[in-house]
Length: 336
Image (cartoon, rainbow, N blue to C red):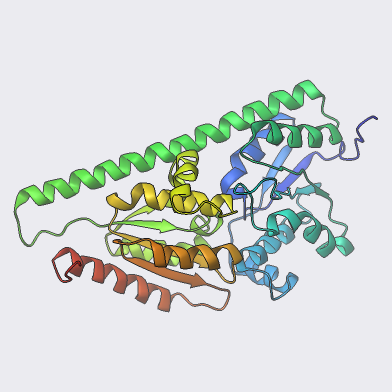
């Protein structure tokens, strides 16, 4: 049966700068450009986008989902259609929060009266390249793209995403090495008043970590206190995923697995961990509690952000946490 080409007239594709854009944005952008479409990415999150998303969402949605709706709203009138992919849980231990399965329908229904066009694909398992290719090739067919051109575009997109991820991993490895070199130099100096550098791992979903509106106050406070900030999502995803099974055999969420695996891979090379979650994230409510109880030997600060939070309290907690770490470095606490 011939594939419908009901999206063939879509020439300008809008992509919300939110949720999984911070994980797969390079893949998505490269793919659409590879099939000859113009891509418009929404602007960085600001108060107007966040407030609009809050207005469009039900109270029970997490903050990140509300912000996403604001980004979709900001693309209305700027593109022919908005790309809202679905990432359902295809197999145990490689799935996503249910919001990534339902988001396509939620957007279509929320913006139905405004006649917003939505294009989508369903990626059943991101761990299987064949499944990723299938989803994007089927979408390309509905956009009137030949199978050959679609295959070429998705191949280039997957290679671009891989190169982007590897560049992040390599940059963080260099930063870690520089941190450890600095630490050794201070220790060799024998100066009792010299301050050892602090390495703090920020553990959060990429759409929290790399959205300056949501987590910028935390990152800025850490850097203002002189800490070297490292990111759990900038660790080799495959290595982190495999490492996570030392923590749990049953955890169903892929990104939470990768974050926990990153903690285990880096725990001996860092001084502290900052967990950041968006209220009321379901997966994080379970995994953050497990991290707090089961990760031993490394101080942890657990932060929850929501639409009503100001930055002053967050900054105070971060500053106190860094002060405690420095006090501990100087022997202020006895480890037992």
